[in-house]
Amino acid sequence: MPKVSIILPVYNVEKYIAKSIQSVLNQTYQDFELLVIIDGSPDNSKQIAESFKDDRITIYEKPNGGLSDARNYGLERAKGEFVYFMDSDDWIEPNLLKDTVCVFEKNEIDFVVFGYFLDNEDLKGNLISTDEILTKNIQFDKKLNNLDLNEKTLNILGYAWNKLYRISFLKHNNIIFDKGVSLVEDILFNSKVYANSNTLTIIDKKLYHYINRPSESLIKTFHKNSFELYLEKNKAIEKFLNSWNVPIEIKNKILSSVIVSGIRYCVNNLFAFKNDLSEIQKIQYIRMMLHNKETQQLVNYYEAVSKNDKLYKKIISNKAVFILYLLCKIKK
Image 1 (cartoon, helix red, strand yellow):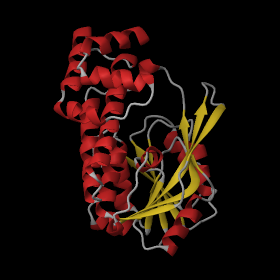
Image 2 (tube, helix red, strand yellow):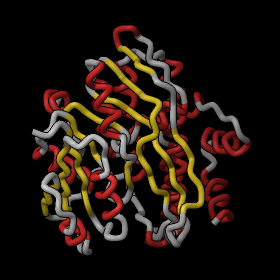
Image 3 (tube, helix red, strand yellow):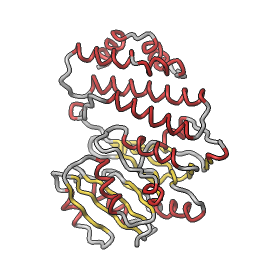
């Protein structure tokens, strides 16, 4: 049996999947299986995956069900002791498996978190710049009540692709991805992981390359339920924080930051992405977000630092729907 199962959901990534798969095959730690899940992809991704002749690669094909469904499909078929969820348009460092498996061999833990590179590309696919997202080596213990969260730490906790999980832990606690959920599927999954585990281990290694590619805003996905999804995200994070007995003042500060950043995303979603909403419907959507009971409860705890942050806090606190609408129109 392989030590690690790598699950690679695939949908419309024919430009990138070869580099992704090759980065897996280049691992210095070779005891793994790669499960390529063709999630109803209409392009040539499957043919490209099939061009790699390696016994450790197994290709599955299923009707399109979304990222969460594809990950769950792979998890059901995984044979390893550990599982790694990778995105098929990114790539990984050669020592990812070696460095993470080593942590499990030294510690009785359920999962491990690591840093990543944020690679910014231009329209031609050339690397423009790289941001290193990293925190120090640290292990939090629920029994010691020593969970210390800051903005940098929170930044790396949400994603699934910068973590290696023990499969028996996931299955024992019935932790899977929520099918049919977009935008926040990773944090919903990980919040269940954090709530059910007694330790949270982070290593100071940058092992993943998340590729930030420019695209025309008109072809980006518009989510009509984006604010509702952010409310679900907040509920999931709150359960995680409660399970770790995080003091209420710190919890409110974290949740307020999530809700404000959620509103900012939703507003950009509303005006920058192609949709069929009328101007009146856009105003109604902004009103719904600003008048939401949870929004108004949490905005008081939001720590605004920049002038822009302070302006946003004031607009939300005062439920200034038309001011926010006009600012977005001007910015657009």
